[in-house]
Each structure stands twice: as C-alpha cells, then as structure tokens.
Image 1 (cartoon, rainbow, N blue to C red):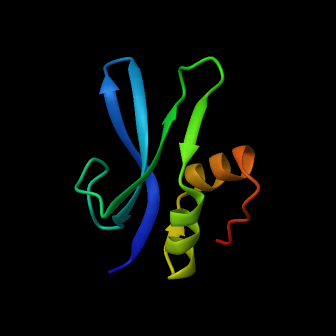
Image 2: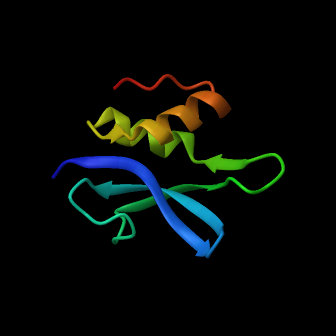
Length: 84
C-alpha cells in the first residue's frame, strides 16, 4: 500500500478547511484516512497551519510521499526538509 500525505477538504461551500492526512494514494480525496496529522485553514488571516511534525517524520521515514501542496506548506511553515 502506497501512502501519501495530502489535504482532505472539510468545511462549508466557499469556506474550505483542510485536514492533513496520511491516506492510501488510491483512495478518494475525502476517503477514510489512515491517520489525521494536522489541519490547515486557508481563509484565516494568518493561514493557520498546525501539524504533528513527529508523525509526519514517521510517515516520511517509512516511505510515504507528501503531495506538492503539503510539502510546500510544511516547508513554508516549519523547518522540516521534505524529500520527494
């Protein structure tokens, strides 16, 4: 099973809110995640982005790949290097 770290959309129409999740790459965008790793609110004034860095490092360490968007958010907001 190939695992991806990606965003899962939540919220209301025109008011998106995202979860950062570890999920099978074949699953639908809003499918059942393996683990919820954090959250991202793009509408908030300071773009609230909160993640569990220890768990992200764990998933990356066992071979999961981050989506381009998640990798960019982590690089922008944290001091973690993402290898693609």
